[in-house]
Length: 216
Length: 277
Figure 1 (cartoon, chains in turn brown, purple):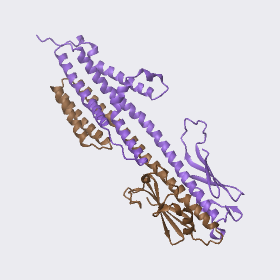
Figure 2 (cartoon, chains in turn brown, yellow):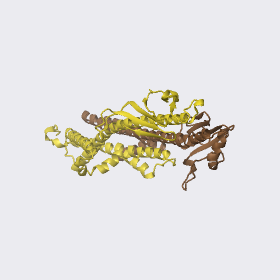
Figure 3 (cartoon, helix red, strand yellow):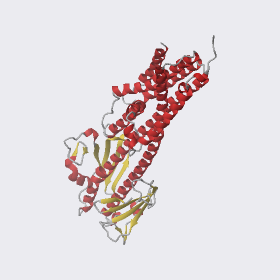
Figure 4 (cartoon, chains in turn yellow, brown):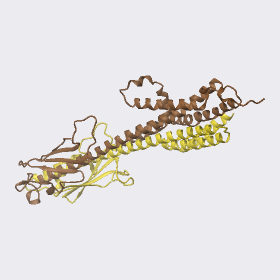
């Protein structure tokens, strides 16, 4: 009967906090809460053992066993938590680096540099920057945004980099480029695309060249 | 009537000292086995099939939680919905925590008391009882030993991981800087001389354009960018020497000076970045 009592008490001590901290996307909360309940349970068990004890050596062993169990679990779990959280953050940083690279190299320079080159190659500079830009990419532009490449069959707009084009007069072309997957600096930042906290760059093409800045 | 207990009559195998000693030896062996398993070439692996279920009970909690954490990182990386914790994982983790912190220690502690009461009454402890108490004590010690061994092994791996990531980030920063230099140089090439450019040339007067002319410094926190002398007006070569020492990589023992080095060649309409080291 004594065994069933303690097994039942342990079930409640671990089970209640374990379930209370349930998160469908994360197990750490439940594990930490469950382990805290387990530590309290082992403390209670040790005190009970101490109270009923007839041998000091037995008390020492009981104490060592309980402390080692909790310490071992805590150390191992903490290390796994730190490592996996670090890996997750690193993955997101890598994603931001990839997104930045694509935006800067492919979306910004990849389309603005040919425009700039064409602008300076025209003999009389009769055409304005906007005109040349529209001549080169007009077919790709739709609803104020464009993608340089034609859509692929499995193209999913939600996961792509979106580029919004606007003009300042007829001599300046502006982009706002958003990577709808990569995280930006501020998680509350409102992106031009309606997303929140995503990587965003702004760039300007004029006769003075290409300039860009990261806005999130 | 009540004769004093003669401790000499007790078998040494049933004493708590012996069991503690045996358990400690068991833990030490487990730690050693764990260390051997960390080295894939060691033939010991095949002899320790028991480690399957041991590993499951020992690691299921931190491994499952870590798996979900990384899986959600990958999901976020690729723009997919986050993975949910499966019912099986949720229940498995609970069982492992319950087994580790309730079933094993409670059984051990309560059985120890029972064995003590047998000793007080000078009765011989039943063999199944002794076996069970040894198993539970062994489990508790083994678990703690494995957890500590995993902690130390993970610490070492984590340290290597952080070094590798720092180096990757450093290389990313360099690549970004080289790309920026390339596009600035190409713009210089495009601009007419009257607008401060090279007028379809990388020359500035009778010399090659310098990094200063493009708005970059030769020495930065990343390292040194050295413009190599060139008489051609349609290409620029830049050598980058990193100021960061790379930790010696085991797969490349010939790497003697441990310096990051890149070569950048810029043409009017493209550029080539070559990683030398």
